[in-house]
Amino acid sequence: MKTIFSTLLFISLAIAASATSAKKTVTLSLIPPGGYVAQTTIYFDLGITPAFSASQDAPVVFGTNPGEPTIYSLSSDNVQCAINGYSALTNSETIAMGIKSDTTGNFTFTASTLSNFDSTTIIQLEDRQLNTFTNLRTNSYNVQISDTGLTNARFFLHVSRAVIFNVVPAGCTNNNGVLNINADSTILFTSSDLYTSTDSFITTLSNLSGAYNFNNLPEGDYKVALSFNGFYIASKQLHVNGDYIVASIQSLSATAGVNQQIAFHSSATNTTSYVWNFGDGAQIIGIANPTFEYYQAGVFTVVMICTNDSGCIRSDSVTITVGGTTGINSITTETRNVWAYAKTVTVVLNEEITPGAEVKIYNLLGQLTYAGSIDNLTTVVTLNAPSNGYYIVSVENNNVTSSKRILLMN
Image (cartoon, rainbow, N blue to C red; front, side, top):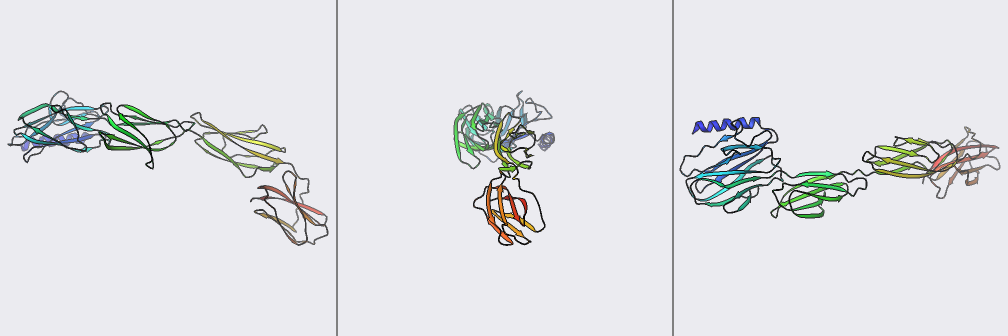
């Protein structure tokens, strides 16, 4: 008996050494009324043949002690095996089991190990004499056996393939994503529930076998929860990508002067191509954040068009008002300083104030926004709700006019 055990151990170690990371193993135990426990091992792996192979399987050795049962599985060519390999679970497998016992009474079948099986794989023991199926992943099976000797063609182990999940992106409209669930056709799932990633219930489908879909989904994270025979077995977290484009334009100011550079910034997702049309016939392609300047005054509509490899397109636009020069001289002196903060303009003179000194503020269209006399070396002007943008400050004193461009922001 020791020699036989050593041989089986060697075969087991040889099989384990050659196993791939895809190997899935279930150990089936048979517990008789007495104190002995019999076990057999079935595994599924890449490159394994269902027919008996001495390098992949181990033949059964029947127990010789009184009251000691034996449990085994049959290879596809009906060899009784203590260790039995089948090919990877790309399809469901049904494996005939056999037992030998010299006693009768209440026997219990249990499954253990269950290493590397996907949570959606169902492992069941069928009793064809009583026409019952027992889910061995959650239950044991108790049965009265009244015959001694070999019992074949009564018990069968059913192992389903894992459920396959595929995701179809939500598309350009972000409302046609699909979760495709392809279940083993030999299994009837009681229900399949769809939730958001925060476990908010969306919908349920019932009595499912084979392939089915959850349709019309926007981009986002989802959870599919599966039930079998009325109890929950597994859930899968899935993400639906979106091909749709979100695009918007920001510019520093809605107004500018002729020959003044304007910086445009795009905010876009799922975009691979940019086309900018600036309303004066000019176009820039392939740049997300361009700068541009106009050579004539006017009102222009800037349009950004975004596309991607999925054929989605999205556009956004902004209106830019371009004004001409105000005609005031641009004379700078070391005795005059002008600066702006928020909507306040400060003028500081370091020179004698002459009669008629004044400060004027124009927008870039040349329209007068403010005019006032200068009576002190420091003049502070607070504008009432000016539009954000650039302005021209004109300072006239001692028959000299100077100007400076400033930026006002509320």
